[in-house]
Image 1 (spheres, rainbow, N blue to C red):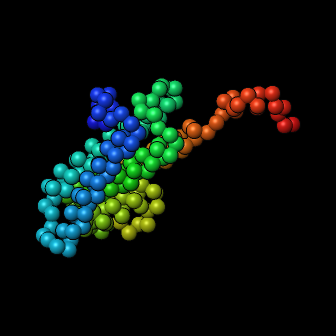
Image 2 (image 1 turned 90 degrees about the vertical axis):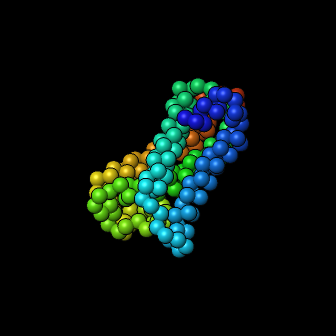
Length: 198
């Protein structure tokens, strides 16, 4: 939502600026995760309410990414002119950045779900953002080794949502790539008179 507002107001005008904008959010997620991992080795445990705050921020960012990529896909399907012109490699790069950020952000949401759970949240407690990001990556890619599993309602809801988002991102990635393939009716003049093979 924030990116769309910035695009409409003219603060983001090029694909490079849009990619840089998304890299900033990726950097924020990495910093929060590093702080959590550093806490395991260098300091006292982070209070649960800070994970809840980080999780609320992360969930908002995840929803913003899903909304942005899906509305872009629908705009392309409807033939609307894009607000920012992007080539295939820029689209794939932006989608990759969004995918990695989504894994990290879901890790923070899993930590928040653990902090909010009254009973055992996961089969093994998530010690920090490394465990949470690992579980997030296994969930979003539907690998699921089984070493971590949600054990209560909130973590199960988060895990289900992440699995669905993983499939949505895969569909958007394929759609973004396939939308650049040349359709037969868009071929050059040379192909117009060619006989079809029988």
